[in-house]
Length: 224
Image (cartoon, rainbow, N blue to C red; front, side):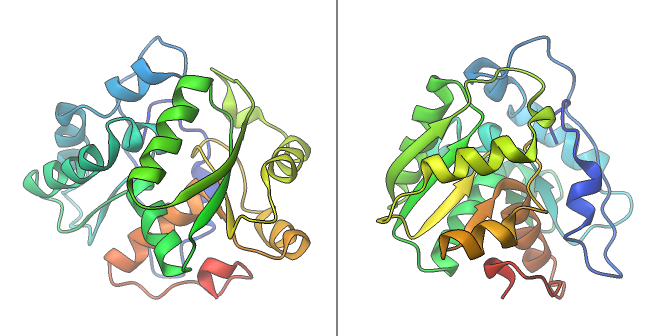
């Protein structure tokens, strides 16, 4: 996880009984949330160190839980991240952005609307990542935040998703693992009539599958 991840309690809500989550973080970087930071927290050295920190308990899968850090180098870069984690000893490796691609394919999504807290440069890279993977991006609304993203209120997230959604979008994706979303997914899916995917949600979904764990029974379309 990136050093500034603040939603430990939220990710546990996707963990079914009998599943343990062990957490480590990348080193602190005194930078705003933008491209330079995304690159620094996702270097091969950071991935190796983080993976090695988690191996003692014998995990079934290792998850790199950060959206921007896993799309900043494109589709090939995300694949390389997983290769580095496996080379370091992960029995299975998952990243947030790779999990997003898997979730979109699982739900047969073609075109997606994106809601994010990001500055324009990161928004452009995320859109390019999705398009390179074969998905259409019909809109992307952002909050232009570069710090304290975990403080975004539920009401702001709701309004952001509504602004991003389009009739042509098969799903909406809420980017960034520091955006709290667990309590919003079911209500937004009911309101919009389509899947609402979020960074932490797709990450835990993919990690549980990679670990061979049963999925929790949740009123979220990805888990339906």
